[in-house]
Length: 126
Image 1: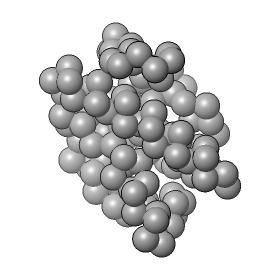
Image 2: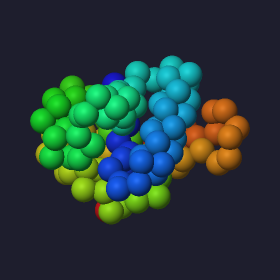
Image 3: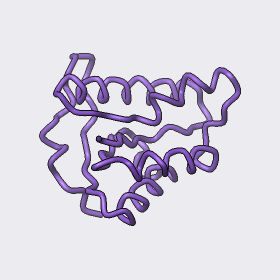
Image 4: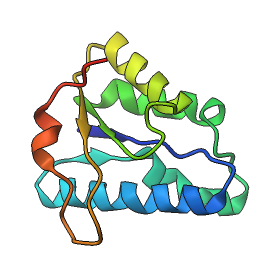
């Protein structure tokens, strides 16, 4: 199972919504390529409407449980991924569990299936 990490938290709801759409797009492309994917942003964004917090501190325990179960972590390199407290923590947790950490470029434009799946096989060098 791939754990698809991506930045989410931002004071602007429009930025959070865009990050959600991009995470959905990437998760869909990976699923269509035959991969099993859990994307925490895809799961959690709809819950914000019901008062669930958006920050890493709230989601850390839940996400750590999924990170324990995954086979690898793929970081969706949206704007802000390097500065994201959550993504940074997810990478560290993955490394602590000995999970491979890879990266995926976001799609270009609105063409379905454009995430470059070849990048999933490239190790993140940090």
